Amino acid sequence: MLALDSLPEPKRQLLRQVAAQVSQIPGVEAVVLGGSYARGMQHADSDLDVGLCYQEERPFPVADIRRVAAALSTRGTPVVTDFYEWGPWVNGGAWIHTEITKVDLLYRNLDQVERTIREASEGVVQFDYLQQPPYGFPSVIYLAEIHACVPLHDPHGRVARLKEQVAVYPPKLKARLVQDFLWLAEFTLLYARGFAAVSDIYNTAGCLTRVAMCLTQALFALNERYFITDKTALAEMAAFPLAPPSYSEELARILSHPGATTGELCASVHALTALWQSVVALAGGLYQPRFAL
Image 1: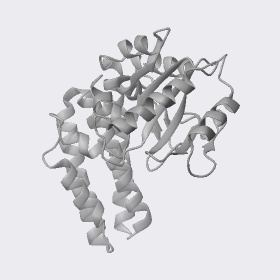
Image 2: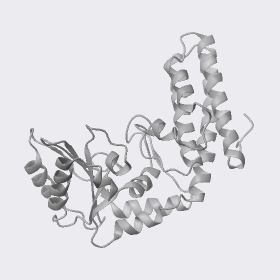
Image 3: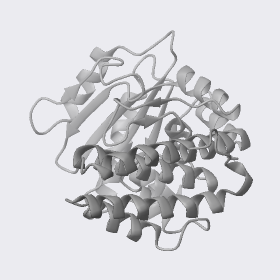
Image 4: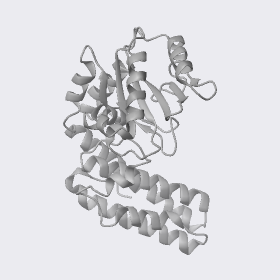
């Protein structure tokens, strides 16, 4: 597996050790490598992200995860959560510090993942703003995780079957994300103009970052790429065939100094509106304004 070949030997041995131990826990349906190593975007200090998949009706005992985590840890007591303690999507796991690298165990309810994939194929998406910074958790992340992950233990082939389901980007998902996020960006820009006109920095800046998130989500969908994290989104977009010229650079220019005066704030809103118009042009008939603003 190419993703495993990219691991330095000490990390590879550690990953094998982790996978061997957690795969023996009753209720662990599958074990996968995720994160930067699965996606080929790792660096020297990248953690090992290991997904622990389970069936909704037969979850594994968290006490067994605590036991394995404690045995692996070389620095203090590891953080181990119960199910859904971190929230409804990033639904639990463990942070383990070892001498080789940090290991993150991430729980994944396979029935929830399967429902999300099925809904996405029909253009149904969810967005949990409070789940994680900076812009929340879109349900399409589950599709991205399955698409990228490397199965380490999948005896019943369930992860393999899910990977087949996300091999092609769903057309209805693309249409829905492009339409919804470009509309939300247009609607937010309307508010931004009003806030900028009265020198309301707090609300203008909030609108600008909200629009930036919307444009990024729309561009991922336009390019039929599953969005997985804001941390690497702009780096990934540099290779997109459909994107405004110098998109990341223009976005950075606008957001680095939104302004302290009415004139500066209005100029930032105007510049971001121009960037939105560029994305709308790329979307073609996939975007139709819902109302005349």
